[in-house]
Every structure is written in C-alpha cells, then in structure tokens.
Length: 262
Ligand SMILES: NC(=O)c1ccc[n+]([C@@H]2O[C@H](COP(=O)([O-])OP(=O)(O)OC[C@H]3O[C@@H](n4cnc5c(N)ncnc54)[C@H](OP(=O)(O)O)[C@@H]3O)[C@@H](O)[C@H]2O)c1
Image (cartoon, rainbow, N blue to C red; front, top):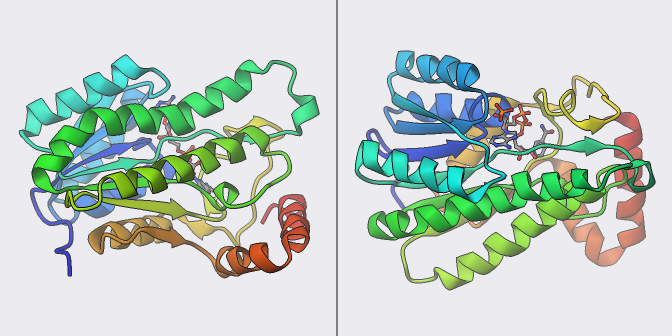
C-alpha cells in the first residue's frame, strides 16, 4: 500500500489557474504540500497561489504556455530549482472545442488543441521524469470520457484525449519497476469555465455537472493510491463495458449527452 501525498511533498500542476487544476492545488495545499503552479495567466496563478498559502501550503507560480517545449522545460527546471525535488506532476492544462469538424475553418485549431492537451503533457513529463525517478514519484494525466469514445463536436479534443490515454498507458508499462506511478483520469462533465472558453459554440452546461472540487478529490485520491486510472461518473463506467458489447449504442449516448449538454 502506497503512502499518500504528504506535507512538504512537491507537486507540479499545469492548468492550475482555474477549474480542476485550481481545485487540485487547493486540496494539496491544505495538506501542506509545496506546489508549483503553471498556466498562462500570471494574475490568476497568483490568486490561486495566495489561496494555497492561506490553506497551509507553499506555492510558486510559473506562467507557462504548455503548447511549447521550452516553456515546459523552464517550468519543470524552475520548480526543481526552487524546491530541490519533484514528487508528483499533474498534467491538467487543457482547452476544448464545441463545433463539428466541417465547421472548422482553420485547421490550426486542431494543431493547437493537440499541442496544449497532448504535447504539453509530453513536454512536462519528459522534463520531470528524471526528478520523479529519483523520488519514486507520481504522474497524473487528465484525459476525459471523451478520451474513451467518439464524441460529436469534439473531434480534435477527443483525439487529443485519446492520445493522452495511449501515451500514458504506454509510459506506465515502460516505468514498471521504477517506483513511478502513472494515473490517467477520465472526468465527465465538470462545472468549470472550460465550455465558456471553448472554440466554437459556447454552451453552458447544466447543474448536473460534477463540481471541480469533487473531481479534484478523485484525482488526488487516485494519486494517493497510485491507481492506474479513474473513470468518473456512472455513465462513464457503464460506457466502458457497453463499448465492448454495443458500440453503436455508446455513439448514440454520446450524441445525446452533447445535445443535452450533460
Ligand atoms: N470541465 C470538464 O467538463 C472536463 C471534463 C473532462 C476533462 N476535462 C479536462 O480537465 C482539464 C482542466 O479543465 P477545466 O475544466 O478545469 O477547465 P478550465 O477551468 O478552463 O481550466 C483549464 C486550465 O488550463 C490552462 N491552460 C489552457 N491553455 C493553456 C496553455 N496553452 N498553457 C498552459 N495552461 C493552459 C488554463 O489557464 P490559462 O488560460 O491561464 O492558461 C486553466 O488553468 C482539461 O485538460 C480538460 O480537458 C474537463
């Protein structure tokens, strides 16, 4: 049985300026963890860092665009220099879309989504791995239920989240015996601003969405236990089995979920 993340453990969180990443940071701060927070918005990162300090943790901010390799390397190097070790990396930064493939006028959108959601995690993980090997640390990657099935209006987003799954499932096998755990998480709808920031139609999702804090609790619990994955929501769990038995039914469920916004 693995020990949970504890006070003074050093945890790097990308996409920490809002939503799920902010909730993960606040939760770990309450345990006394030392945090390195990355996202693009410096003021929002400072707001979250102040909340983390007030909650009992240490927090340093690293304004970073994870779409590029050099800033990701600078983030990880800066965090390691500041704290002297890295115990965990949470690859959470992400952007979404809500438009059909044929409505995409400029395919740069597809590249941007792949860069932020997939390559950002690859860059940060590559930079952090030597440090994580040294501490027998933990990696978490935030995929999505959209990383487990097809979802209309999310073609590039689904591709990026499937890529996250394939990459980290493969890396987990490579790291067997190293002591470094790899946890992939698959949230359903979570009540954050991601939809408002999406490319394309801006739907406001309904009140049935999971709270960011409830999602963060599951992410941190899975990292504590070094679980290989967490599929959130009953529909997500059921969908995994249905995919084997009746994949066309899963397609219809996905289409209906998008039409309803939940
Ligand atoms: N909300 C959901 O329903 C849901 C469901 C499944 C999975 N997820 C996944 O959960 C993760 C967090 O999303 P969220 O719902 O918490 O959304 P959010 O509130 O919009 O947070 C996204 C975070 O990513 C950061 N980010 C975006 N682009 C970035 C870039 N180029 N470089 C660095 N940071 C960047 C944002 O900060 P800046 O804008 O300041 O850079 C923000 O901190 C994402 O990977 C998302 O795909 C969300």
